Image (cartoon, rainbow, N blue to C red; front, side, top):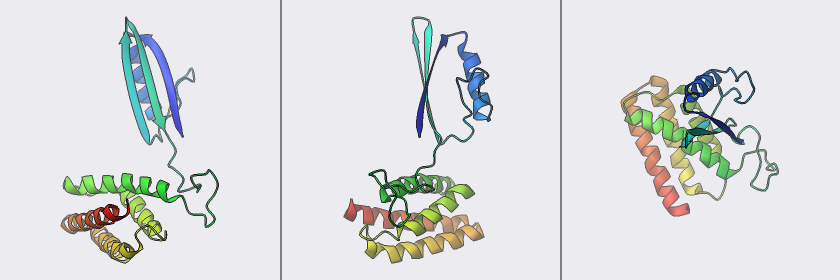
Amino acid sequence: MSNKLFVTCTREELSSVFRTLADALEGTPSTDGTIPSLEAFRKLKIGIKDEYGQVSLKLKFRTDLGDIDAPECACGGAQKDGKPSYKSLKKRMRSSFKAVYQAVHAGQLPPDTAVEAFIGESRLMVQYPGFGDEYYAAYDKAVDDFVLAWERRDLAALHGCVDALNHLKTDCHQRYK
């Protein structure tokens, strides 16, 4: 769920607002209740405008993780089989794969949470018929190779696996988008 918060203050008070925001990011909401705990934020966007000495701070934040845990279809109802909507799953996969891809290409091991999410989402994705079924066997094999490289913490092998997964994704999306 996305939330918006507006704070109006003077330029001098802005540093205090940022200190309160820093506390909220560490899990402590503001004492006046205007800024909730943001410890579990997924997305955070801050916009600041100085309009004739009056500073307007707009904070947009999202704390939910999508419908992986609470499956719903686009119409708002639950899927018959209990799986999340394909669109939602693909959004989640885009995020987890991006984190994995960027870390590996920066020469670092990706975060465990991103890898675990990507693997789980990949295993779920291939259960949806009609979205590139002929790619699913090759994709599953590429994910298996990725898992092995991840378990060995072999960065060079991970790099090759990530590139192979990206190639498969690109081929499939060119055909099915």
